Amino acid sequence: MIVALNVGLVALILGLAVWAIVAREPFAAVVGFIAYGLLLTLVWVQLHGIDVALTEAAIGGGLTGALLIGAATRLRGTEAEARAERPGPATRWLAAAVSVAVTLALAACVLVLPVPAPTLAPEVAAHMAATEVGNPITSVLLAFRAMDTLLEAIVLLFALIGVWSLTPDRFWGGRPGLRQGYDANGILAYAARLLPPIGVVAGIYIFWVGADHPGGKFQGATILAAMWLLVMMAGLADAPPIRRTWLRALLVAGPLAFIAVGLVGAVTAGAFLAYPPGLAKPLILAIEFALMPTLTLILGLMLVGTPQRGDTP
Amino acid sequence: MSLAVDLFSVIAVAAGAFFFLAGTAGLLRFPDAFTRLHALTKADNLGLGLVVLGLLPQVGGVVAGLKLVCIWLLVQLSGATASQLIARGLRRRGAPP
Amino acid sequence: MNVPTLFGLCAAALVGIGLYGLIVDPHPLRKILAFNVVGSGVFVLFGAIARRGAAAGMGGDPVPQALLITGIVVAFSATALAVALLKRLSDEAGSVTLSSDAPARAKNDAGHD
Image (cartoon, rainbow over all chains, first blue to last red; front, top):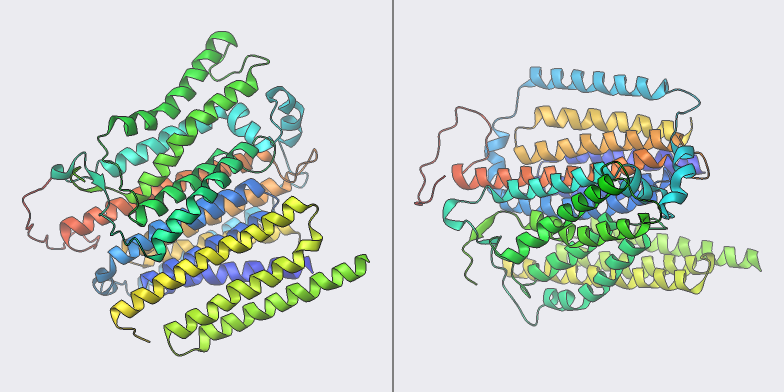
């Protein structure tokens, strides 16, 4: 029974992936990709990765989907020209051959994986008590591989700077995106007033409960960013100009706090990002509290995009 | 007792699945966008509602059950918002089929 | 065949499907979509390997799963940067063709980089 469920899930996912590649309209392809992302969440549940499932649903399905829908509608007139450039049958056969070869190579790798599977789970379980965190993935993200999380936050910041660096000179420092019309009696304004309080509570809950149960700051920050985006889309608030000091201060506060905690660890516990015994939980909380507004702002601003107008309201 | 509860869950979830099937059939077969939106909202409200109703006896505790009902209400809110926005956009554009 | 192997093979197929779309479709947005399909295939493969490492009371090896969370977030940021580049290309050149012999559209506005 479970086998039938999994086989059905795999069939649906492969079908949707093929649809996302071969659909004629880019908008249809993007919608198929969003459904594919949501079904991938079920795959993660089947693979017993609940934290990854939450992240995939929030970021892979939600934010990436919104980003690609915006891109598909913005680039609506360009499909005809692109279609004229489609490669001939020779290139297609070659591409198909390369794809099949790569698939077969990967499948062969999957089938010859070592049978007592090597795993780090016992090591994590043995050392998790020192971090005073109940969720093993949170302990890996913020204690054992904290360097990866720090570099990830810095990479996100760089991506945002990359998006901002595409501003035309005359709009530098201005507001991202176009001004959204505000219809006070519209359904979008109604939803943007009703949903954000619930969403903010849900986001902070998922962030807070990530210490001991599936959840965490990435998933929580995504929900908060989504609520902020909803408010901006309804016209209830405008995107902030990117030259505002408070915006830039909040953006760098997260990585700076993380690096500061790392230096504290270097001084008191002998290695960068090491935690002195007994202080692990407060330091982890400090990092997470500093990173939440940074992540929310980065995720929201990356979706809104490059500044397209000056900073006058 | 437990058999009756499980039977109730199976029947309710099956009924919810039937409404999802009906909604999908409507999406594929109805002639224009407005009627298709109408079919989809049936799947959202009734289908998901019946599935949640069927799952309520299976969760452990009142809080988890309240979370399920909350999810159903949030899906209804977002579905209603999206349907209204799509319908208004269609009417503004002259309602193509 | 057990569950991780099934999803591992599915992941291999996803990488192949995405790779074909990446090579064949000339529109950059479709390439970004195909690249995301390849990326998610790699993530599922990694997740299947993590599932095989279930031990010590956990459902899966937590270290690869934590790396996967990092990967999904970074993949989103890469997609956002790619989409921003694409929109800017469309604004400046009027078309999104990636071929090098496309005529550049005359710019009507005074602003230029």
